[in-house]
Image (cartoon, rainbow, N blue to C red):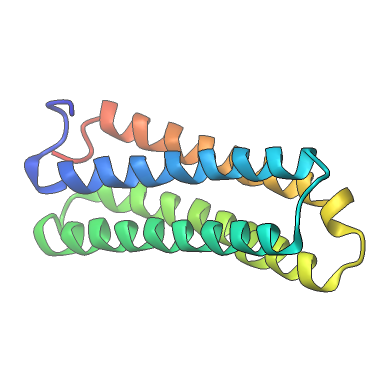
Length: 144
């Protein structure tokens, strides 16, 4: 990666970025399935489970980064501010993926053909925001 990340965080940050990109890709694939208007209910359920699994992986990577920051960089204010900001965005993203999309697909009639696109686009927006925040933190050498 870049020399602006210490070896302590390098692998975790790279994995976090890969998981974010995988989630973004999966959301795009989900949108393509929906646009085809030729899908089975099982395909929709499978895609939603996959989105939830990817979100779980992202949260686990966040927790690993947070644990390392608390243990090895307890006085680094910049990294802890970054982690608080990141946590807020991750909570919003999780609320859309696990809350709105999951709940509405099960309990709101006509949500899949009408309302899911807005929520999928909102989640992609949060992913882009998280990526931008992460790039900014790397440029500012927060992970040194």
